[in-house]
Image (cartoon, rainbow, N blue to C red):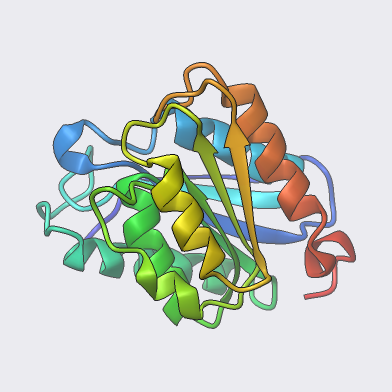
Length: 204
């Protein structure tokens, strides 16, 4: 299996960590070049972390074919392996948008190398996110108030079952694809990562 990916590092040094970014549903045109994923990558770099965007199996130049989320979790793990090998000792973050949040956050919860997570446009109407109620890693959700796949009452119900390490931010008037709202999304992600102690201090 070969995965197409783009790795970008911030100009500022020292590097504080690195993040894997997971794109939305492959069947519906999701790729690593999705605008939300691209802007999340910029946010990650603004916080001093390297950003790895990659295409799930069967997307772009990545080999294989869509596997309903099962094989895609292996893709996330492969991306984590790559960052762990390239930046040994640095803390890692998992960022996922839509389908990428469902797949990525599952892998992130199970992998001790992932020390913080971000879910964007989390589609709670389509996928079960109850696995997050046992998560104690610092986690941010950013959701548009007009996200058609994330009803506010359902999201608020999940949020109440999350640990104290969970943060929920709403982008007023934004759709699932954060139109409008990309600037606000980017700001929330940078702010969240910049205030996590092990990134802020540079201590891995």
